[in-house]
Length: 614
Image (cartoon, rainbow, N blue to C red):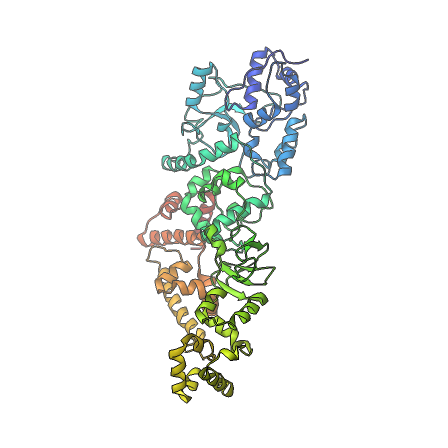
């Protein structure tokens, strides 16, 4: 038998709260009777966040009711929030379980049970919202926004939430309790931030305000679910743009950790249940290839740090360092010049800078060029860094043009190559005989070409010294012809070769001295990073770009460079040494504060370790 009535859901009201208000109005003494009225079954569990039996409820609604299963799930449960970062298959399985009467696997499929972020133990409420609901609707109700793990303040008023005495689980699987002035008491003991120092609470609220918009977006809109690896790739691309990852997709984990901790104070991360514990923690894993899902709160923290909106994360395609294909042929003598005919590209990385290098080959003329990325605008589509191969079409066209009465400069313009390249392709570097129109040559030109033929190994200067008058006549009459028809010999480079072994030893000495200076126990700790050392010895670019040529220095630095965690431990050691020198005895929390660290079990254990070994 269907329901005779059903109460209208309030804005952002939790599905559990809707059912609890129905129970109050139904006159049923026992919750099991209400469960049967709503779902035509007594096996349904009164689940707080991801309920099941939605289809059964829809079937029982009065004829005039206009609610759909999707409206209940999307607008009145935490499904949109907890499944946003699941794969399409996982999200669909959770949705189907919520529609069905069998919801025992919902919390496992959604990853909530496996997460180290605890679920909310008691239904929570905001004092101002409670009073506002009483005034507006004549009764309070439980809001979805107040039940998200890690969100300890009201997203409307930015004031701490309070725990009611109503358990979210464990109080009876058929229990429906609605909020009242008796079970929702705002006091110091029920304040969820009661144990948090005021200064930390203020920092937390600042960060929470940055998360309000994405939290509301996730709860109020449905996005197409992506495969788990999508998020890792999106985050890595954002890190690349900030210089925190290589184009090979390898993240500079120490730099990323430092960047993240500059944004979030460790004490604030504790409130979000997302403390950083060291290498291999959630912060490291979330920007790698995803093999498991991560709690939405942690995604939101990363998105905020990278200044990425929910829409950018879900809707914008994963970008390449180069504008989207197809790409243009840039051979000016090809029939497909500046037409988008190249569909594939070879992507490599610069050995020195690790920047991307794209290699593009026209399928019609085999003209091959490279472009150093990343592209900054659509205009870069017609930019090239260098030409790797001009291809047979270009070379054949050059031979044709060389037989015409065309100046070197004009030939260079037509062929899209500099004059030296034109000369190289037409003369001895290509080991090809220059094809010329003998009928058009003057006596001096024929004499000059004969002189070159008789002395193939002589340079222009040597030929000129052998017949100065001939050279000067040609120079005055047709300088461009002379330049194009003069030999180009490979000249030895005058550039002084660098003795990298000697430089390695010199740099190593400088680095050792600077590190000893930084490790001076009397000096306030400064983290030992490659950037810092390079700045101190005045060779930052050398260390960052040519370290691979300095093997001794590189090996020494691998042992001496500090991770964020190493530096934090050294700060504790500095404070302990200072206390010993001054004869002070300070409590653990004071030591950690002086070291700029939160009072957490991890750091208390480090202090104990130091004391045992002193």
